[in-house]
Image (tube, rainbow, N blue to C red; front, top):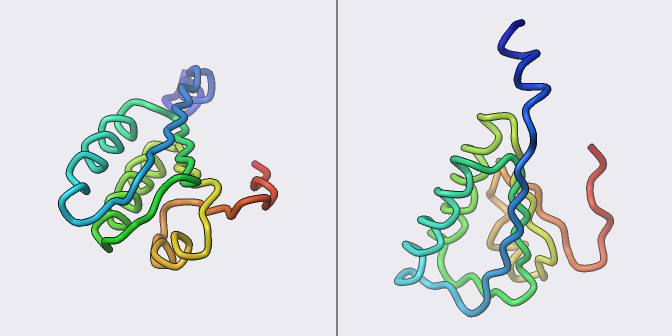
Length: 108
């Protein structure tokens, strides 16, 4: 059996994370550590940003890096409930799917 065929049968692990508060430069290390651990083991990470304020571009970088790691392994980082400010901060992310409050989820 080829590695691709094996991967198609592997079970998916989904992690739902809902950070809360204001993430500035001093707080990014914890966010990066959490997302790094999840992106190394989960298949899909749903990051609910309803209760978050991103004050640092480094927070967006941490999210994009985790998205890249998931994408590289065939997974996905889905950021949901991102208000206009958070969406603006995440505008440069190339490896995370960002969805605003009340918007439909992307179809697979």
